[in-house]
Image 1 (tube, rainbow, N blue to C red):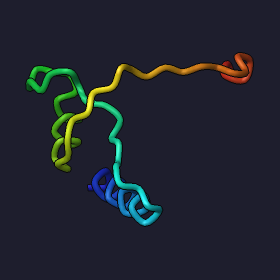
Image 2: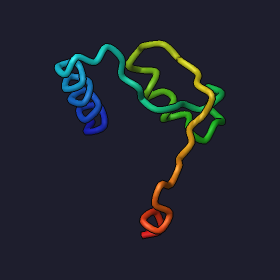
Image 3: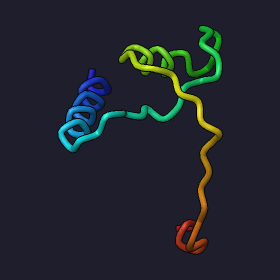
Length: 69
């Protein structure tokens, strides 16, 4: 599957650059099959690793006009 190959190559590149962690950027709060993103959860958890919870993600537009384009 292309998704796996893309992630694998990104992980390999990051490791070659000295990275010791790779962040898949979020999973659903629950792991139930009724969850809309259950497939995304399975894909990301299929790589192994630990779940790490952060406070949240925020964006700040330094140039608000440029963000509208």
